[in-house]
Length: 354
Image (cartoon, rainbow, N blue to C red; front, side, top):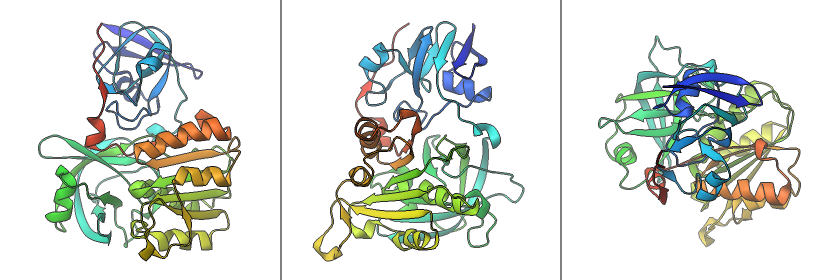
């Protein structure tokens, strides 16, 4: 059975089958709906159901609560239609500029800027026309069919730079993690990995002139680094404030790189923030929660765009507090929450019944 889906306010329409997810059908039809994890864990694809009825697959309570579902919100990544639908969702311009493809990639180098972070550089096939937007991610397809997602940490224009020669990823060790244990104990140069991408809608909206706040925690810095590189390459003039939150000084694994960018670029300000500074750090900088540091500096964010990437709790807290306390429009908050496998198996809501 086929259903029609209309997305407002753009008026874009597409048809889909009853057993498809709304997001999957939209992306297949070239309609750029926002999304992140595609697993019902992050809430990035949440939008308003104006007309019609859907059934939700199992999803995380934090991504869509029963109260939100009662209020008419849906997660397009795990919603299947029961009738024709009308959705209210902002469109992601340029999402389909680079086709999603599967390909092999070769590990060219593994470096350790800190004890629990590895920087991987991966060579793309010589015949590949793989492209991406700064901020997007790829998924590795493991031998058992499971997938792990990591953001590109370099801007697209650097892919042919001999120092990079492909893509750069920042991987934090999650003890017991199927993929990260392998990266930190057994992975060797020249190993072949299989990946799919580019994926995600976390990238700067370049049709805007609004000042930008870039907000990162931990290795959420990876896509933020790519965005800074891209803005520099594009001769950006918009004011950009970069806030990077970590626990201890050693966790700011590319602190010198970020500081150098701020020293060289008149439009960029860099503010590192430690939540658990230790005496041996000798830290004289900002302390506390990174999103609260933003609020200390910006009491009014109504004229800004915010791009936040990192731990789900940081992203959720920033979205809530920036909107409630600093007047940020929800439509100007863009996020990529790093949902681990543990996050995806947290407090969940079972699939709804037809």
